[in-house]
Length: 462
Image 1 (cartoon, rainbow, N blue to C red):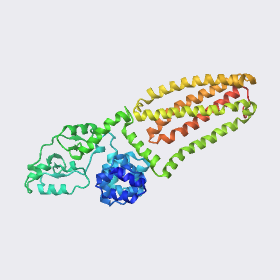
Image 2: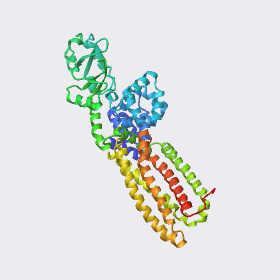
Image 3: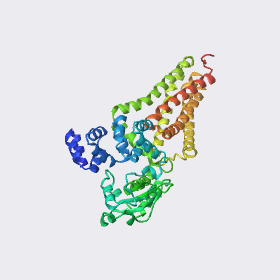
Image 4: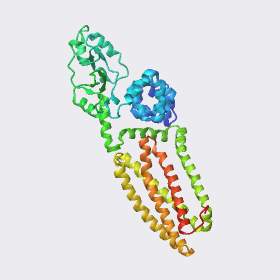
């Protein structure tokens, strides 16, 4: 069905594509919406009835849910999120930018906001982050008929959530569970206490989500009860979520080896989709914000050149090598950021071992490259402009300036993206502008200061 919808959209037949999606079941709706561009996705999603919208949303991946909420805008997203389970909102908010997520939470009803924040206070690897609360729990005095009525009232939940009824005492302490099969075979007026199985397999609210998922995988239950410190039923881990957790755990071998987690990859998925196929205004706003750094940096670099105008006038040959100093550092910085980004995506860079392993190695690489380039360029500068014009030390000036620019850009090419990842800023459009500004400023400053010192050129203000 996806390819039919896509063909309609390519041919400009939006109404036909929308009709196909609207007539599909929630699972198929979610698949189709995930395959189309964000602008079409939001336009079609906004025409669903509230119940259809919630059902469809719950069948989307976490990244798709986060992207859709962000495209809605904060006010509309908050109105819609108020109808969602707290655990679903928490997963989506964890993938949104911190500012957007905080603003979205602030617009939620107080009770819903507090519930979501309680989930988010747990570590990303904690089972509470994937725990559901829309299970059916009854007391031991409840009859079979009452329990079945509660099961019929479940909406928009995975099928495995309705396969078990959990039993607690009046204080909420967990007593055990009753399967749907056993309920169907029992008399309608039978108390649940006569059917309840023992506690069986359970997990705690402090357990790791991967450990809990593997525990459920080994058990014969479709859902795993999660108990708090007081042995009360806090929520459940359903089988479909457990399989997602295990799949995510396997994917971490690709997205990370030991540090950034698939959460960073998921955030990059949301950011990448918005930058490549989201609203043009978003791309312009994000990229311009970082380019303002380059604009300000360019003006600062221009100020450095203006400050050393007399030095340039005294030795015109200095101007020949200014583009070399600036461009070489820029190319090295771009190389380093590209290598960092690819290594991060493929799991070859560990955020935990960044300083003692990757940054040290890049510093050694940068040192070697800077030495080779400095010697080569300095030698060329000496024979080309230095010796013929009676300024043999020009080669030293060019070599030292290039060494500084190349080594600085190499270090910054790894360090700045790392900092941006750690603070949650998108490093794709943001690293290069900072690197360009810093290496241009330091490279040219060293270049002119060395010229003033070694060549005896005029120093401004001296």
